[in-house]
Length: 211
Image (cartoon, rainbow, N blue to C red; front, side):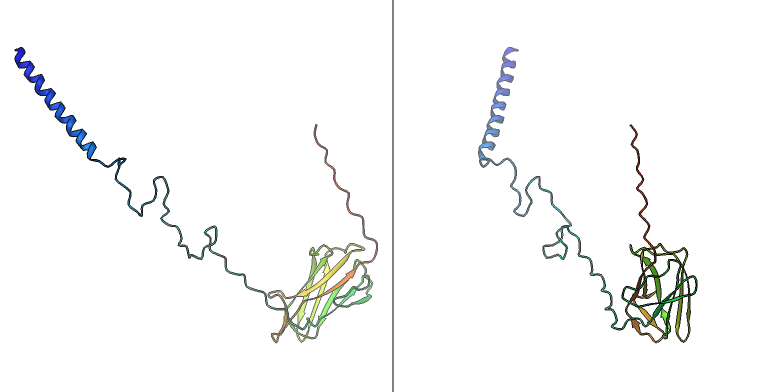
């Protein structure tokens, strides 16, 4: 029995030595430092992300990858002729004060109303009253267009004394006024100051901090 077991152990040792010899021969046959197959020439290095939707180098995109916005359309050049219109202020007692365009006029009463008129039928016309800060003053307007144009403006409340105002004339639907024949006119304004002293600004409201 012992002889039989000894023969089995000898054969097992012989096979194990043969297996180790094959592994050693395979290791010696490999190139030095070659642990994995080399990457193809066009492959990206390991760990680097590859973008599949990157724009080409000659793309029209900007530095941030956004296409440039189209230029905004330019406004038409202002017409050479100014709108042919005259203006006057009427005080509460019926005294009429003519207003000259594009200049500083004399003072007028704070409770006056205004009339603008033209021999031309101005079909595209807008007239607004603004204060010295450029804010629109609420008014009640009435316009009549026939052979000519008649435009009446009445402020909802009396104007502030000692304050500068302007009547601005331009177009309602286009940047410039237009008559019935299709002729456009550049804007025009009438500037004036109301009589009296300018009231002092309202006092600033001080807020107390809670302790």
